Amino acid sequence: MLAISLMRTGAKKKPSYRIVVKEKRSKRDGAYLENLGTYSPTRPTGDINLDLDRVRYWIGKGAQPTDTVNRLIKASEKAQAAAPATSASA
Image (cartoon, rainbow, N blue to C red; front, side, top):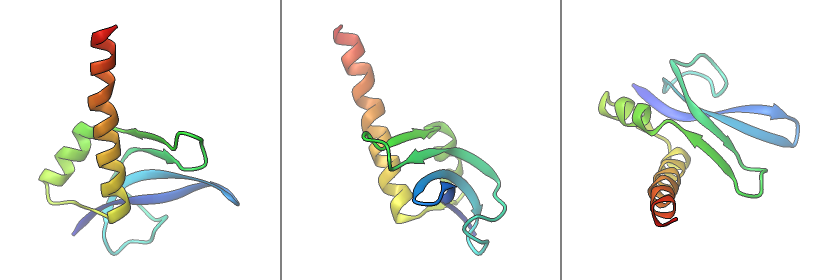
């Protein structure tokens, strides 16, 4: 079974994460199929860079996002929906 989960990168006490598709039983930082984006929780805005088209593709193929990744997907969709609205009014 496939999972969309976080893979930790970064230095000690300065975490950053890759959002990846991998086998559910593989190690947290083990091999993965595709890198879908990044998440930096230490930044003031909590940077989330995510390729939502690829996320939808993998979910359609049966990949299940973890709870944290599901929250990040929703936040990214919300930010993407708000971005065109602000640029259209300018």
